[in-house]
Length: 230
View 1 (cartoon, rainbow, N blue to C red):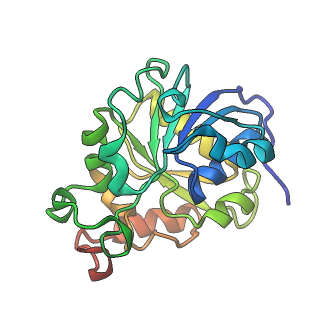
View 2 (cartoon, one colour):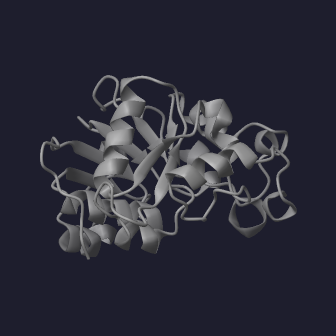
View 3 (cartoon, rainbow, N blue to C red):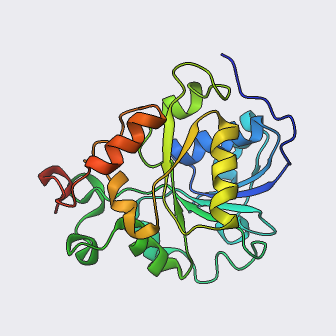
């Protein structure tokens, strides 16, 4: 399987909070690319010994995952976001982007979250819970495709991933990271626009190219499908 190269890319310290399908996949891929990854779940780091051994990442307590991080990734069930310890991000470097990959699945997993049901975009709700701005990406791609389908820049069939968040250096860093992983970064607008890539929208799970992703984002409706409402 061809992988994108790292020529010219800088090694970063990346803290990942959550070691499920997306968090675990990002742990593997980012470690493979040479980044220094610290990964945590809600339990003892020893529960991640196998993932750490396979990937070369360092398993840590959740409170230590963001320490000195250039990038922090939160990839946990939406219902668990309010339970994150206060100050969990305080050890990250100033200006480090906080990526959130979460999705709201009220019927399948999370139960009812009133603010989201009332129309608050999922990522804005997450940002409010953790008290920090976030960048939304990786929420709409199947974990196995994230693991296996990265392609070099310009390659035929390269999947595009929408990225929503405030413009600036943090978002630019996330664009570069997505590209390094082997996917075309597409600007999904501000965090207020992040509903365009929530579950049930045309771009969600579609594995589109860059042009198709732009069209799918534009075609999204704010009416949440019945399967994704409480």
